[in-house]
Length: 112
Length: 109
Image 1: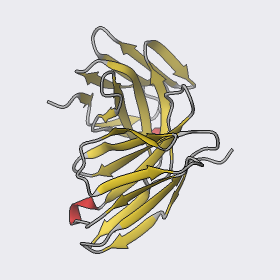
Image 2 (image 1 turned 180 degrees about the vertical axis):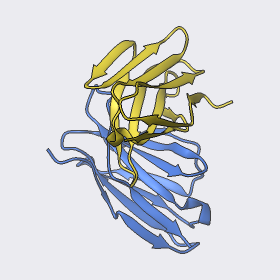
Image 3 (image 1 turned 60 degrees about the vertical axis):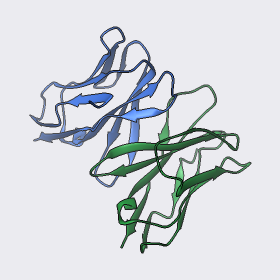
Image 4 (image 1 turned 180 degrees about the horizontal axis):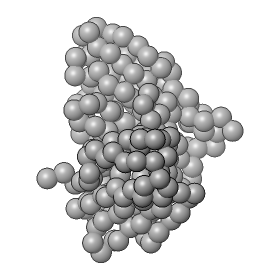
């Protein structure tokens, strides 16, 4: 079956702009989580959604937001971009009752 | 002090060597994950453990809940094992993943 699909794979924005990233989970998976990876901070948890509800949130400012749709696809949005938001953004999905995560290839955001 | 500590940070091995990567954590957990990340970014989940030991091919993962410690072993290492290996724990109370800084493994032929 198809894996976790993230779009776009690469994007370049300028400071102050906003960006929306998309994640389509494995068919049947209702849980989607998002992560930020930077050289300085490593991998950090952003948020997790299950059945359109945010279940958990990491320690990121309110400029970072997300949502999940009824088909389990998820989007995350970053407003008022800062240089420090340049990172690889990864999403992962998992099935009901499972802890094993399947990751997407990531969206690499560069903020100039 | 980070909640999840990995050692070593960097590891270079000769093809065929037995490799051990360690992970120590300081919080109560419901599960521990070992992840592999190749250059280019893609992450693959290798193991999810809550107790004992798991084996998949040349990879073995163990966890000691009382000591809050896990190890990832690679037997008969191969250059294609070169990657970053990341330990992550799902905190029991906060129910979210906390990651170690990763171990960069290079296996030379």
